[in-house]
Length: 440
Image 1 (tube, rainbow, N blue to C red):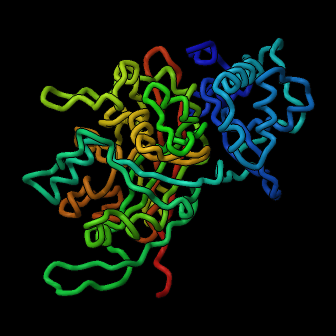
Image 2: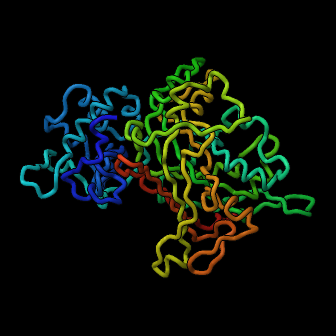
Image 3: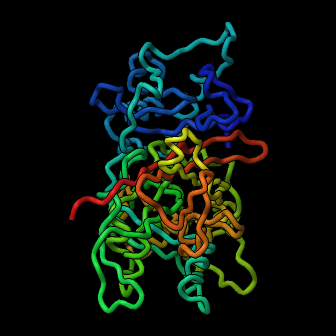
């Protein structure tokens, strides 16, 4: 950790000092935005309810050395070049930006060093995708989620024998990744009802969300060159929120023998702000404790550093707001809260295994944790688990019941990191509204 993580730091941007702000000065996440009414895209940094347009600050002689190189990468319509920047350059930029934004609101000695136009209210901006994602991989890293789902379909053998030996994953569809706020159209597909001889085709009746964390690849690796676990985190630029929407009835019909396909590839929602790996440092915790009897990770998936600090204490909350709730101007209702610290496989293990066969990851690729669930009631990251596949519906404040999602339902995922001796920082919001299926 360094001075940028100091919990006592405040900013002259007053909104950044609110105790519930996702974007205090200790965070400084990157995102791509356009000013409302304009099409030009720029890389900015969130601070409170404002965005620092770094490109607008280049003419003010505020940057030197490697920090200036990173500032130039922000004067782009995508974060790709920024994500490729060396760690030491990103760290130098973060330290300088923290210095520029530090201060006490109302203090006469505090000045705004940014040039006019370099600070943009979020209310006057539209967020854009951070980067063109080339490939997307979804893992299955939460042992609690895997066990919960396994119990629904295989009560006597919920966890398959390979689960504790390797991070399970599948290749998703990058082209259907959308930004928070985009509508999610109910997908069509084949389903088979118990007792019927043949499947039927139509809208899914078991639409679900999956609360996940996404990891953006910074520096890639060459084809045929695996990434050792000791170097894996050097290839991760930062994190975002992910909702990997799922059609459970389509999924249960199609997943054997090759796994997820059209039940998963119709939409994946991500949050717009990318919290850097350096910002996560105060919230690092040991990797998931493997109880006696569990196999130790194979050597290529094991390092002392990853064992001691490979986890991240990141809380993920899921909220729902039905159409009736919106009409009644009601606040969203929380469905669950879980922690990334409870996943069985660390981000470093996921990346290392992904490249272990020589697979080449590229800058801007995204891999996700899979649904993050915990061991306690209310910590399940999907309706499939919360309702036990619809058998035990959740009840909303309006009295409505939900087994799975209906048209007009809005799902909102939020994330934050908070530990004693550190400031609270957040990941913002990842939301999507379900709309009816298109005509066949």
